[in-house]
Image 1 (cartoon, helix red, strand yellow):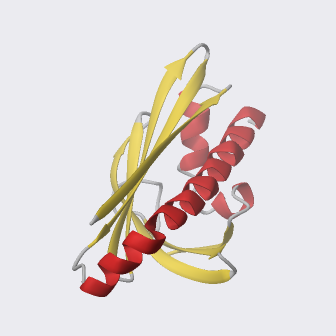
Image 2 (cartoon, helix red, strand yellow):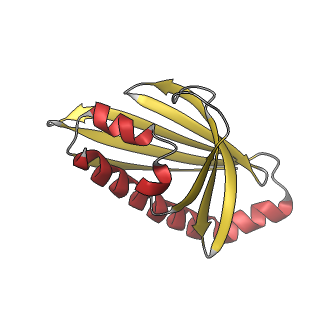
Length: 152
């Protein structure tokens, strides 16, 4: 069972400035209003294997998820992964220069690893609502990334 959504935001900043924002994991709590806290689990610059715990509040509940960088091709793309509650989450950022700025495309996917009858029923009933809420949160993240990159 997989659910995917894609959003694109045009940013009036060069890909290198956008990359600087999305790869600044320690600073993401200051950039993204939806992120309550970041705890770095690895040292060094952003790259494959970088790990951290991200705490967000969604639907009135605070949740902390361990995340890691699975792939990176600066300043063109990066993929971040997380495993939580029986699901595999993948967030892919693609940066493309256009009209003196950058199109930042975010593709988010959630795959239930071992779907049960209950999880299938729950996804059928609430999957669209959950993805709608996720799209709204991701859209806000993109707007805030744009604002930060444009201010650099």
